Length: 331
Image (cartoon, rainbow, N blue to C red; front, side, top):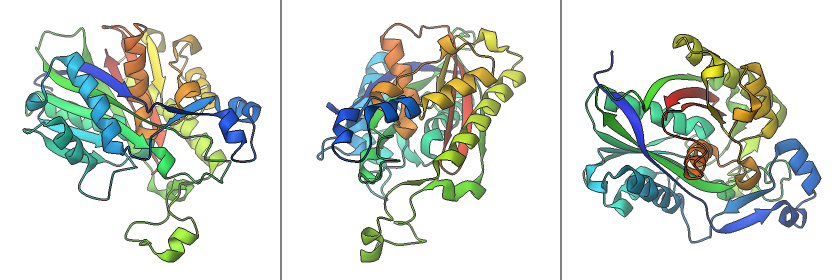
């Protein structure tokens, strides 16, 4: 049993100013706006400036989350960054963010769970808070996906964008049940590792002239197989958490799915009996920002006063690994 309740005391997001539209992509690869919108729901995406790194995006989002929470950088005990596009292999991007924020009392670690990374990071943060070990943890999902896509591959380059979203997870008083992290569900299946991955750059295939020449440092994806796995496992993630907490789907105020494909999101809502009108969708304006999609959507729709305090919100994601999971929160 938890000693303390954990709650999200602050949210924030950041998207680079440059916008790449479908019309822009039509000039780059053999594609068109109608094809992209009908199959993905994406109309535009934000692209980081060449001078910007993932840690820069994460810093901006983290700064906004801290401001909303009223928690100072010095009061942060731990920084968790979920990303598959780190500034470098090491040190962790979280360490670079810590330095930028001057969060001198914080531990730092990165989570590599692809599009599910934010939910994995949130689950880790909640455990530290609920056991009483820490009081405030900054969890960030941040990606520069534009750096790892092949801009000559029309099947993948149209999907992704750059951005970052952040939350501050804080310890609440025992009697504060109006806002709290309720429960999560995490799963993975490494047997599907070849459906969505980057072949080279690690210890298996170190960087070389050949790996660069053969474009092995770019994201590779088997779209149809990934689509099927995403729908089924995201639906299961939602169902399992609701069942474990004896909550019916009609009690969910908002569903925030990973923004990978609008058809996936609508199918997951239908399979779990959650009203489609309750699905938060911003993929049309941001594309797939991997680990950043859920915190960006949460922060954006809170800023718009659409998501409100005390509402029941379901977060769900699926990503490379394969990884998937959900988190039920009372925001």
